[in-house]
Length: 469
Image (cartoon, rainbow, N blue to C red; front, top):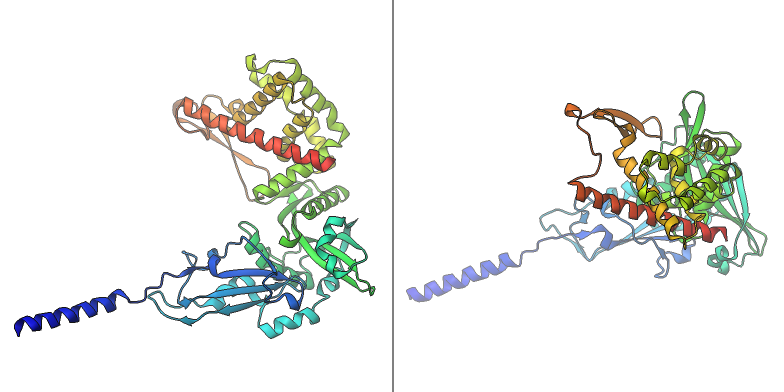
C-alpha cells in the first residue's frame, strides 16, 4: 500500500508540473509585424487589399523600449489614412486578450501619440471623403504660387483612371502660423513621424515658419477643378548676423505614392528661387538625411554647371590636374590651393545662387570630375590625390596646427555653419584628429574615407549627367 501511495503522489506532482509547463507566457508582438498603414484617396479603397501600403515604416519606436504590444492573440491593426483630408482610422482586430505577465497594452494612447486628433472613428472617417474632399483646394486658395509646371506623362500614369484631361504641378508657399495651414500641417505630422528620420513637429505658433506645398491641379471631364497634395517642405527664416536672413529647410517630404517623380527636386528648386528673388543670405538644411544630401548635391551641381562666373576656376583646376603629377609633389598646401576654388568664386556663388561655402565645396569636386577625361589615367589619379588631400585636411586640419594648437569644428545652435574651438595637447604634442590606431591603421581608414568620397562624387556626377540630358 505504501508503494501505491508513492505512485499516486508522483502522478499528482507530474500533473502539477504539466500545468506549470503550459502556463501562458506572453512574448508580445512587434508593432512593425502587426500594424500596416495605408494611404487611400477614396472610400472604396478603405479595406481593399490592393490599397497603397507604406512600407517599410518603423512603428516599434512608439511602443515602449522593446517596441512590442502585449496581451493580444492574433492582433492585426490596419490604419487607413486619407490623402484627401489626411485624417485616419484604425481598424483593430484580435481573437482575445490575456495577461501573460506583462499586462495588456493600451492601444489607443499609443496610436494617438502618432496620429493625434486626426484619428477618427470609422463612420466619421468615411464621411470625410465627401465632407472634406476639397479641403486642400480650399486651404491653398490663399497661398502664394511660386512655381507652376505642366505635368509630365509619367506623372499622370497613376491618375489615368480619373479620366483627367490636363494637370499642372504647382508649388505654393504659405505661413504655418495661419490657422487653416497649421491645422493641415498637424494632420501631416504623422507622416513626418513615420517617414522622416528623426522627424518631429515644428512649432506652428512661430510666425517665422513657412511651408511649401507641391500640389497637382487637375480638371476632370465635367470641368471640376481638383487638387491633390503631393508633398511639402517646412522652411524657417533664420536671422543671420548682422542684418540678413537665411532660409533653413527643416523637413521635406514627398508622399510615398508620388516619390521618384521629381517632386522633391521641384520643392528644393522653388525654395532656392525664393532665396534668390528675395535676397536671403543663403539656404541651409537642418540635419538632412543621406538621401536629401544626395538630392541637394545633384540640384546644386546642376545649378552650378550653368553658372558662368565659376567656369574659369573650374577650367583652371582641370588644367592643373592635367599638367602635374601630384603623387610626386612636395608642397601639398600649394596643390590644395591650385585645385580648390578661389575665395572670390566662393563668395559669388553664395551671393548669386545662395549656396553656402560648405555645400559649394561638396559640389566643387563633382564639377571638376564632370570636366575630366576618364580615359586620362594620370589626370584621374591626380583628382583622387586632390580629394585625398582634402579629406585628410578636413580630419587632421594640418594647416591649423602649430605647437600643439588645433582647431576643432563643432556644431552650434545659432548658425548652420560650423563654429571652431581651439584645443591644445599636453606638452605641445601633435594631435591626430578623428583617425584611430597606429600609422598603418590610420592610412587604411583614410583610404576608405577617400574611396567613399570618390564613390559619392561619381554617383552624383552620373545622376547630374542623366538629369542634364
